[in-house]
Length: 327
Image 1 (cartoon, rainbow, N blue to C red):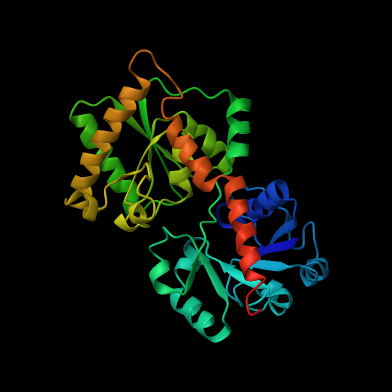
Image 2 (cartoon, helix red, strand yellow):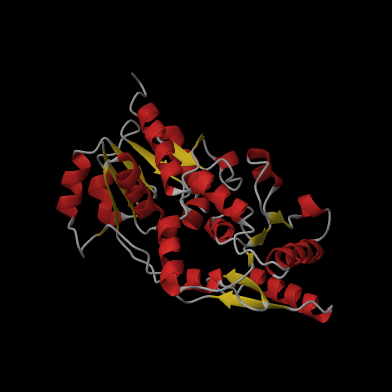
């Protein structure tokens, strides 16, 4: 089967990882193409104008069984000729990141008038209620590259219990997390906060691997890639995850400080949940005998739900359904 994944840019490298997973685990002739690389320096297949030209992409697209797009028509004008050959029967809209999330009314309008399928992860409470969605958990954690990075850098966990927070900007979340950690320190807990920003993804992974707890987000109430990477690294993961996500996956191993989960204010709920995460991390990593694989169940959860092989299998069954639509 021949598959093209395309978009203006590639949030969290998901277009590339999808194409790679389909190649590696299903044997498909799959490629991804974007127009704008990001400073996070993710891997890519094709970048328009750098290692592939538009006419090559268009010729490949014309021979594809299915086209997976991450943008609405018009968001990537350089790829207009490729979008022009997309139909509800040969393409789908892959929900990815904030740009997609911010255009829900346009997505719904486009669906109603074109019949296009929007593939939305079931835990995406910020999107599922607002569009006509096909439940497809397509988020991929790049477990293979993470393992390679950790092997190459021989990463050891920090001697002091470390809480990491990866962010792209100074925002309310970072300030709330800093205040929370300061309160824990004032109460006598021996912890430190490592705020990670402005570095490529592979360097961020190495930094995160030395920590024990991941603090993710107060803005987007879903377990995104940062949460899943934290779990894969064996961290206790703390984030403002909506109860909806536990309805979909009751065994989701993330500690949520969402007010609907704690019956407290955002800040007080965060303090309560973070104290519990510190207790669990200290029990796991600072109690003799120390076993660095003590949280391997978290790693297994990610492999089972969001590893490249299982997501490739989901896409295989989706394509089976999509290619039978209308027949």
